[in-house]
Each structure stands twice: as structure tokens, then as C-alpha cells.
Image (cartoon, rainbow, N blue to C red; front, side, top):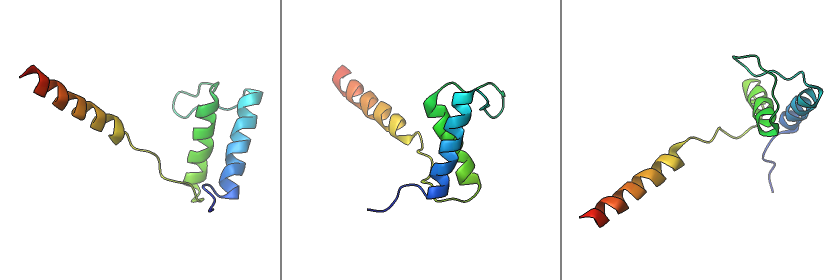
Length: 80
């Protein structure tokens, strides 16, 4: 099975996790310290993506909007 991330990308994530644990990892615009594990992973992956490493594309928010529209259609039909 093929790797999801390249070795360099996973190394970037590892460095971001170590920085988070040390309390030195800062978020982009606000510059606040990162406390969330998921946010640290996202920062590591975005840095790897910026360097051109093999990282999958960001997931778009289309799935949530599709669910809402399908719910709206169902409720409209039942109201008639």
C-alpha cells in the first residue's frame, strides 16, 4: 500500500508535535501558542505542503453543505 505522506512530511509533523509539547509552537496570524494536538499536526502538514512535499490536499467543506441541503429538501417535502 502506498504511503499517505512522504517521510519528510511526517518529520515536519513530528517537529511540530515536539514544539507543541515544549510550548514553543505558535499559530499563524495571532501568534498564540498551540495547545491542540490536531492543530499541531495541521501546522506540520501545511509547512510540508508549502515546501512541496507529498501531502494530500486539504479536505474541503463541501460535505457539510451537501448534508444540509439534503436535510432541507426532506423537511420541505414533509411540510407540504
